[in-house]
Image 1 (spheres, helix red, strand yellow):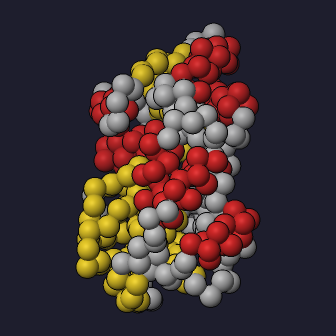
Image 2: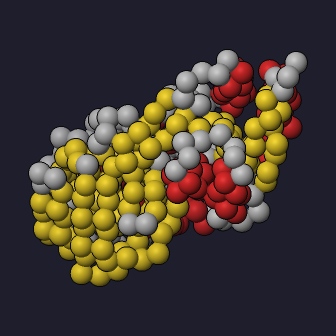
Length: 299
């Protein structure tokens, strides 16, 4: 059997170390199907992005990523920057796996590996998915400004093996010091807003934090992003909203504004935390956001 040699990038610490533990079995399954993975392990934040950029620059037309949303984030930024049309395969092994959910990739990693191998061997046509861009960085699943970015920062500091529940703990920790409500000026295609907010969330996929169905209408192949703005709320109100947020039943609540957009500008009087695909970004006052239609080729 002629084996197809494909770079496989893995963050061994993803999913609290699950990605690294699964790697030998993933390699075994790929090889059994006729795919020869050339394993490249990342050693630090940003390392995977650099490695993917190098591989694509050397002619790789298909790559596989084993990891979570952070690993996908780095790979997507490298692929879009390269502009070569190289295709991405994902074997979910992270904590939230929000991109995998949005892209209908099985969350069972062995099943995902076998299906991906079958698609590679059969030379299946990649699916075209949208991405987003905020300032100079791209995102695959979503961006957040304000409270949810602070929650993300706290969650990233935990090393407890509790899966998605780390984000729930982080929410309660973030509320301990009060909930900031910075003033934002928002200008989108057919929408404008100015005033205090708890957060602004921009979604390409419907899930964040693994367990929060924040944007039920979001589709990563429709050429649009979903903007949610949440008015200032109390700690008690956030607690009461959480069950609805997990079920995607919060959209008609009076504190929430929702609109589909393709381009968005946000200005703040103060530097704010933000995240892209769960990756914390430097504090910033100005955010330029846009959808990138069919920017991703998914195996």
